[in-house]
Image (cartoon, rainbow, N blue to C red; front, side, top):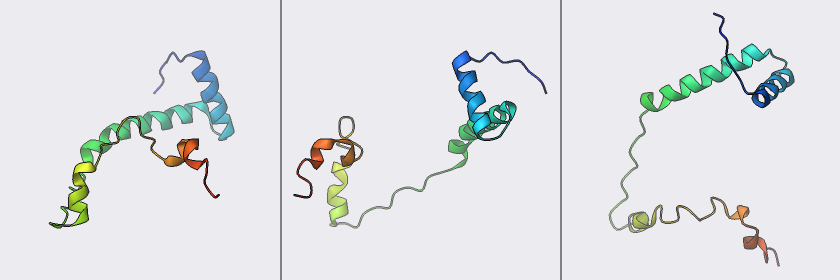
Length: 91
């Protein structure tokens, strides 16, 4: 099926060059992108996560449960993202 879509110039240029780098046509790249978006929408409804296992009573895991998630927000996701943690590393 044919259709007309308005795409911002910058996005069109980036998509066109990405398709060229992959050795594909622009229409194939657009089709792949649409499929990814549509399939992504279906995934959460189809997949069910297993509940986390309950820790053994009296275990360290049980005692640490209350600390899970207290560093949301300003904490770095990985210590390597903050260079100050490596100031004296290896000395």
